[in-house]
Image (tube, rainbow, N blue to C red; front, side, top):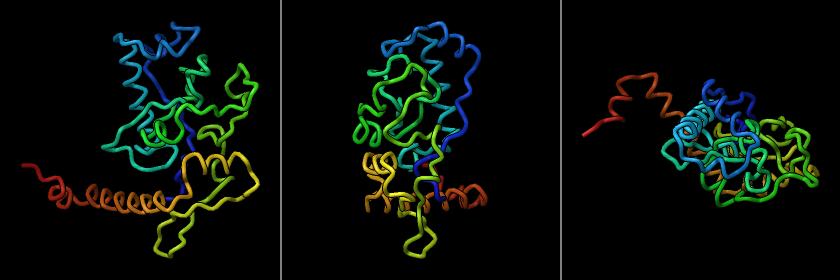
Length: 206
């Protein structure tokens, strides 16, 4: 596992019912996101399920597990600032609450002036969908134990890569420790999936 800041390449695939519903809301704005009708609930349910599958239940920013965690349907560019991108598929990713609510919050990540077309904008941090993350930084096994948990910039003059690392604290020792823990967690999960007996023991219910 060497990709912690996720490199996403598959957009969410929604049902035709949800696609038609979201289309019917145009022009889009952030207030529509708060609607509580049946159609919006179905859309949000499908959206989250698709994002979790596409991201293998990992936060797009820190790469850690979203299982048994508080998960946000995150707007990469703030829906409050860029209302027209509220339902833009490229702008929607799954993230942990810590990365979204504590670190990123509603920071403006589009370089002004903003463009009408989503992909025409220049973003201040690396975009999980639009950037090839492997071109900007890598994760190395600094201790020789098989755990690639230490981030290394490929070009320390790249402002967007530096901004990304700073915003999500990707170079922190605490996050490196959590990466090692997550790798171990996935090793145990694989054993459970491949050995029914181990899985039965670890999933013992009272």
